[in-house]
Structures are given as structure tokens and as C-alpha cells.
Image (cartoon, rainbow, N blue to C red; front, side, top):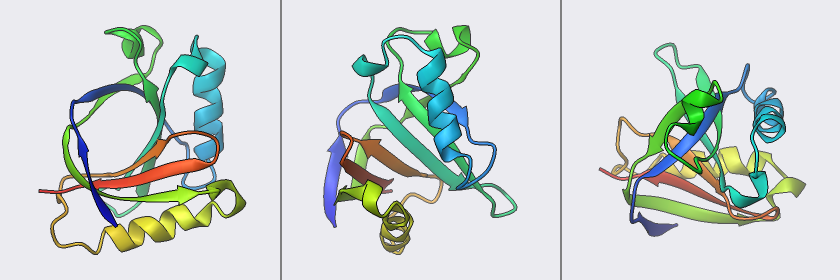
Length: 135
């Protein structure tokens, strides 16, 4: 585990998965099929439990210009700058469940923000950075 500083807020476009974890791929595929210039965007995953404890997952990509999310019919969201605990996973596609077990480890840290979320930052096709914001 390492500490990571996100130096600025990131505006993203979100598409909520219909179910977790089965709907994740479809949520990303829909963004890719409906937004232009996907190769210029950074991809993220956001997850947190709702009031009933059900995990809500949002596929997300960076907004290329202000108001793009609403114009495309998606939900805007801001990934908040600050200190995060993190762990990098290499070759995650060989074992996608490792992302969940990595977050379970990160969520045990007593310093995490209780109003936060689990953040996946897809650096490339093989590398994902798992992050949880600290208080």
C-alpha cells in the first residue's frame, strides 16, 4: 500500500452499471460506443455501497469539455483531489477478482474517508491503480 496524492479534481462522465459485478463490462462498453474520442480519455471505475449495502458501480471517463456528460445524457461526477491510499495491480485481466480483494484490504485502513468511494484508475490495458480517499 502506498499513499497517492491526486493534485486536482477530475470531472468525469459516469454510466451506472445495471448490476454489480455482472453489469460492469456493459457499462464501459456503452460509454465507449456512445462517446467520441475514447482514445483521448482516461477510464475509471467508481463503487460504493448504497443505504441497503448494495454496491453501486459507475463506469467513468474523463470529460473532454465542460457539460459533456449532461449533453450526452450521462451523469457528471467529480473525483475529489486529495490524499488516497493505493495499490497498483498489473495484469488484472488475468484475475479480475483481485480488484475486489485489493479494495477489501484498502478499506481496512482506519484513515479512509467514510463518505468516500473505491476508485479504479485504468492506466492502460494491463495496469489498474486502486484508490480510496483518506480523511
